[in-house]
Length: 194
Image (tube, rainbow, N blue to C red):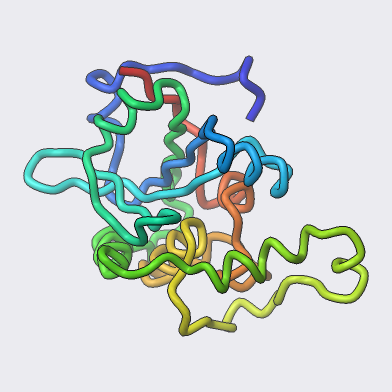
């Protein structure tokens, strides 16, 4: 996403336009985030899913050093202003089979689960010079992993549980944040500021 094309909206104004199952992508600025962005050749270092609970907009995510968790999206927007982009899931209803409640329920199953270090390491290795000459990501959509997921893998798995494969021809365990941002299932809406 070109920073000049971003639409910044205040959280209070934007929250009503965010629905269960929408994609939340982060352009973090920590050293780890910068390395992830550099390695993935992407503006994004992290992916999560929006979910409403008791009138509060929540962020469902699987994050390094913590694993799966659910927290207030507003807290993250305040802590990292203009870093969170909202992508509407199925904005034009081109995928009528998509079940937002099922996707959110699936994503909530990752809460309190460990982070998927094994899968993220396997995906990261594919970015090393020379490795791509001998190995490539699994393109089988039906290939699954029994190991805990990393952030974008969790979003892909949860969205699939909602009835839609967000990144076709790529196994969920190789799905990176930039793959989600390029999916025809998601449409960029706005960038959140406090």
